[in-house]
Image (tube, rainbow over all chains, first blue to last red; front, side, top):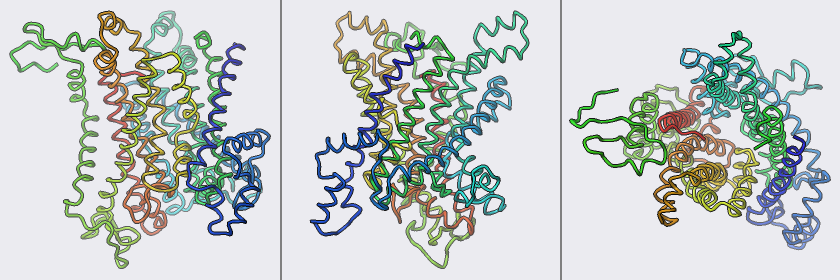
Length: 313
Length: 310
């Protein structure tokens, strides 16, 4: 077990290295260097001086290692627009995204597993058909469109909930703050909820067809006890999907955050792209991607813990 | 089972993957159904898949023949006719915030939106398919190299990677196509590789090699035919994702740019009108949803018809 964890962690290292390389290269896909895009037409001598100041005059590979070294110790550089350290903008934004991500996962995963279980158990009935059609709609749903519909219904027409922002509130744990989170949470929960529902349903159906369930029934176990066995067997697969969906949620929240002007990483990314503020762009993408790598690692390990057969493979 | 109208006795038989080649000949008066005939029969008995196929055909036909449908000019704005409601005379689906005909813009919009959904998947299929075939068939170090690079790109959430690439390249339809293609190469490579690796170990490939078939012949007749099915099913799911992501990129200002007619872009510019004309402002999103769902349902139907698992 421990051996597996060490091996799996060691395997994540080259991936993380590769990810950092991709994130760094992304910036150099753009024509011109990051500075000229921001500064526009200025004095050539001044531009050269600034280039030297930001280190953009060095060869690329050297720039990469300097950047990587700084990032490892938490220095993401300074924003080309505001001159503020990137880390100072990035962390609060990441916290805001995380709040939505956790809420949306809690909502989506709970609804998804319950719905998936119910429809898997009642395969072919109208409940199953209802859940399956809701799930396929959720999977195909452009969540930014769902966000707009929610705003129209609950903010414009009913006037119950605020349409945008995080509100001017002292703490996140208040009704005023929560009101701002309800609509973005629902919009974000749709896709992961639907995916978890589909996975759980398929999983439960497959397990119910297995011989050991028949054996449990023959031994006279109550349906409730059998449910426990089914849950236990579905756990590794569903858990893996949940982990991936959670990380995807954080990385993919840009569209929903844009609709609600939610001050998270997605919104920051949006601003950075249109300001061509490369250090902010690099920092945000790197943080989100690293989180994705980390989640994958944790999920793989958890999966092995819940299903010991895996570590023998 | 429907009775066969042909005088010959038709034996309906499930032909497992990989045996198509051997059983493709009629034996005496018995005519065996090939794998693809079986799949087609099953699809014909699946109303949902057929209906979705029909909707998609209508959408695609409308996109291709848009200029000949007698629609009004999708770019002609008229400030006197802004945000006319759905059902107005001359403007069946109303008008947008600049007084342009919505029906016409939605139909013309399908050209760009469907293209941005389908083209990246086809491009990724060509590149990822070859990479996966090579990785799976050659194995060893080549496999290691290709799959480890794939793992790195797999380590990004798909929307984030698309936004990051499109954002770095700059706004524009071409850049969006490139970005989404790059996003889809790794998943297609993975699926192709895993199917190819499984096939390579099968007895009929071994038998072909033992009987002196060339590598090219083995890949062409034994591998490709069997890889294509699962990968194609997977690609249809990706099209549905691609439509949503491509429109999403336009939605945040990275894909199409005004005054283009494109569903994501229209959804974005109409956001200013949600107070005055809520129904009209959600129409473009509805189109994205329908198109995406049809591809998803077709994929589900094909998957069960082809009995594919991955």
